[in-house]
Image (cartoon, rainbow, N blue to C red; front, side, top):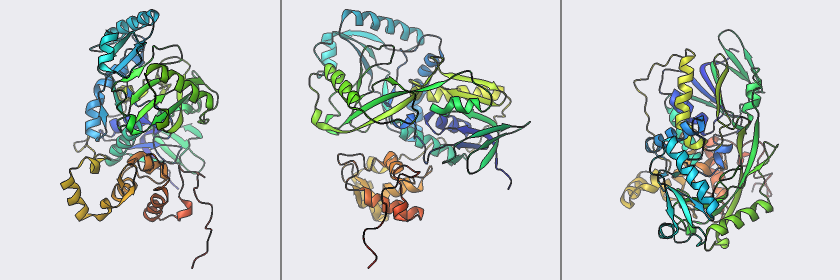
Length: 481
């Protein structure tokens, strides 16, 4: 059978791969996104701090610094086009000692050199006016008004969906296990099938070093850096308005406290180097660290309002900077995209597109490119009158499935039917927030599974949590009547 051919194959459907795919879909190109998991946003993208960093952390002149500031400036427009929730809430870096003030002054100077606007150091009295629930022990803070928050997996789903609506293809459950190079094409092989592509973009996250090695590039290594988080109920979402950091160390920015765009409060992450690229287990020691440091930042931490914990793995590269290069003709590495990768992702897409153009990829703009996408949360943003009108036309929007989050059957069906289509429970969760409330899916899971089975045509007992063998049901306990 003849293998399908593409102009560009992007390996990895995280936020960086998503942004590159969307950018390339502006042109008359046949683009394919390859993802080894059953859905998009399954790696570092689904479990991070969800912060758009201002750009004062990275050293001047690095790709991290340049692309963070540019990407942060681009993000508001992209969020508007894709219908993704975005809040410019600003950020604060707390100082508890005079030594911290020295570090904050250094960050201020670095941020100014990087082109970050509005940075200033504020003293204790103003800090308490801005955030009255912060600890009285904080004596000063670096304020960054351009800091923001977003939902990373919502952004990724929307960007890939927009790319698909503009002609790009998505192949999930496609784990690249070998790459063969001929004169004009690369052949990308998975255990089940293979495709051909003229150009490859390696945005494979934790596995980017393995993909690079398949074309003979062993110049860098990627190791996981574990980060554990705690999520608090929406009752706590107004405890702080800004994203609140500790003064940073070599291992990162410490335990932060931030509201989310959905109204919860997020605490974390820890930072622990690891050799296991699939170990996302939470630990008692991680929980203790988060509670200790977050408790030091606040006057009172509502421990009884925790609803879940989770762990993410960041792709830390051996260079200390983003690794965006071309070790082979028509092959681009986009590796080591740890923090501030989410913030930089729109600018990374532009940078990679420019690299591809230098390697003779023809970039002829599409006249009919549509940058806009209907928001996944459109129903929730409607007025009562608009909702009632829609329910008259489609009663499924009037049937509430997830009581905690108020998510209707119609919204879940939209998630299953809209590019990129949700095919499992976690896919529905990321698109709609069904199962994300206080009960964590205790009530709505069976009905969500029924909707997935009905829409996809698979048996109820074959519906999974996140693809693969993650089955919820083993067998029926009662025979048919």
